[in-house]
Length: 373
Image 1 (cartoon, rainbow, N blue to C red):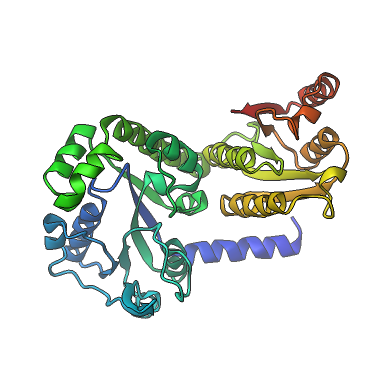
Image 2 (cartoon, one colour):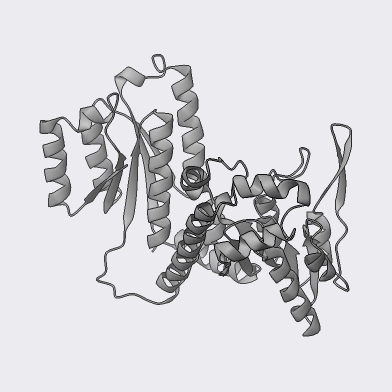
């Protein structure tokens, strides 16, 4: 290790030690009791002499949750005017100036009002953590970026407000708030989730028993994978074990590329591995020939991959399979992920002779190939 890398490594250790601890409560949906549990924890901390403050909490007018706020120190929210309306956001600077030992910040996936310093609340939380303040926060499973497509298949709804998986990976502790489907539906009918005029609509749509069961499974799996990742990183492994490295190969096809990126992100997160996204620009898609829409899709997918923790590789080459092999060797890739075949990209790779050559090369170098549906 050279001098510069040694210095950087030591600086990273110092920054990590100064950073606040981060705890996230995860739930399968609204109404499971995340805010309630955070306020219970805040009261317990306060009782034990810990300087805890409420940075932002959303009680949704639920009496049992609202009652827990009594006696807890609340940091006043910042007022902003947007489109003629007076709106409130968490005052990040006030939190940093007051420097509580612990701050409660609800609704991690929230999008801040235009004009705020950060676009997303999770970015506010990162800023607070970097100031050395411990944060307890909460998020629903449907707001996790790499699960976006799974949630859409289950509920039929595409959730707009999402957090990158990298935010979840930074948590020191992840706790699942679990209820059975029957318990959650009972809470909804009792008016403990939404107001009376929204209950019937919710029961017919999002809060169907089969939807809840599938979301519950996602939440349980996510927390389990976070625990496994923590074990992987904190308990030393034998040096002979192979270090996984993933390469997601994408095309300019928007839907296929998104799917490959998200699924590879899930695999990389599970193994706590470095991963890359490779786009090979063939002469047919050179700057002067590629359609504007495809170019826009590529930019959006590169942004998505970066948010999910990937390193982007963009190269110009006429042979896609050769480019994949070269990059796999250079980056010491252990697993290559591609999408299911479609005419304008993978037919090139999957033609019998080229695919045979690709498989032979990957096999001889102990590289796995995953074709994602």
